[in-house]
Image (cartoon, rainbow, N blue to C red; front, side):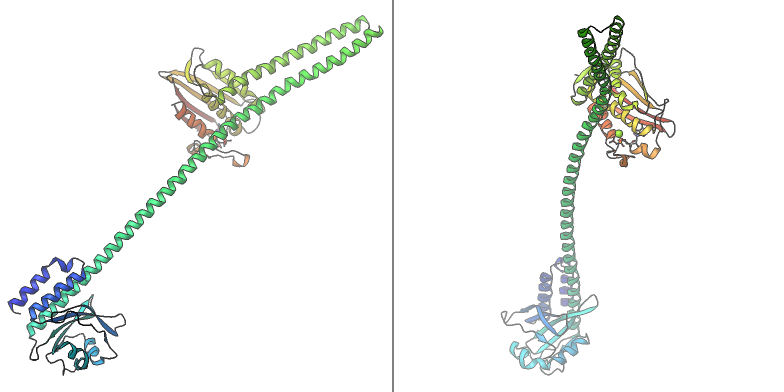
Length: 455
Ligand SMILES: Nc1ncnc2c1ncn2[C@@H]1O[C@H](COP(=O)(O)OP(=O)(O)OP(=O)(O)O)[C@@H](O)[C@H]1O
Ligand SMILES: [Mg+2]
């Protein structure tokens, strides 16, 4: 190939326009290079339609008549021309008006454009013919040299490269757009999930609040039952006294009362009064203790708590809860321990632990059931040990007990919020820490450290 053509090819091949992805630009460069190398005035790129029955011009440069109409070339009208193209060989027609492959173009196309010579080179992409590059000469005596045929062949190959680059660019853009879409979808999903999670947390907090009140409710029910007994006895005693007093009054009026009867009446009345006073006192103590802890449980105030007496008062009001299963609660706490903390929160923690032990550790009533609450003064707070000698739990249960809604007694109405409340109160409200140890068949121990809270 001569140097001039080789240099043009080299320039085209090195140009960044070819692999840049812009097919329009690449086609322009390829066609102007053909014009220059072949010294012609009209050159074009034609692409086969998917059905391969027609071709349309993808790009055409005609220096003589730039605004000329561009026809559609149809197989039905140009069967020989299309047959020649199907061989996928270059059509070298020095005199296109008589060449067997192009003679059909004579009456219309060639006459209208004033073209005499045609050099049509197949364009290929991924091994398949996609169209032709059509070089046209308006000089009647033009002969295409083998150098020129090779030159256009190479330009056609370069066009294939440009198509690949454009295709890649399209895919990349598509991928980028899909990525962006995906990102915005992920973003949207994340937002809606975050919102759902927020809602869930709020619902959970509301439930926890409700459950706190439920713990109080349990306490109220237990204490109400317990107060009812001495009050009932008192009412009976009073009724009894009233009845006897009426009888005495009658005897006194009709003068039938004997000295002995009067004596019996007085001693019976004393007995009744003793019963009355001891039962009313018991009811009053119960109410007093209950008031103390119940008020504590609903209002949280930071106080200096004398632990020993506070725990005793609290346990007194919790005893009714465990009485049925004959559980005894022992407290081992040094008189001198004073802890600055939210007493109400502490009351709720102990109430929940006692209620849990009663519900889960002990199945039936037994004299040996025992809860021990042990406290130890530490450097910056007090450590509590809450032990029971109940049925204990396996390691799987132990792993989950502080999770909200975890319960092994759903069918008995457990909500699984008790220990999650305990956990929140210890770690958040009281800034402490809590852990659990348990051996199936032997019992469970909760250990929690409550620091002295500053005012
Ligand atoms: N002392 C204990 N002995 C054995 N198992 C226990 C003990 N305390 C708690 N558990 C186990 O821990 C689980 C979770 O307790 P939690 O207080 O959170 O819920 P619950 O008591 O089942 O229900 P709720 O307290 O809401 O009524 C219980 O279901 C039980 O299996
Ligand atoms: Mg519970």
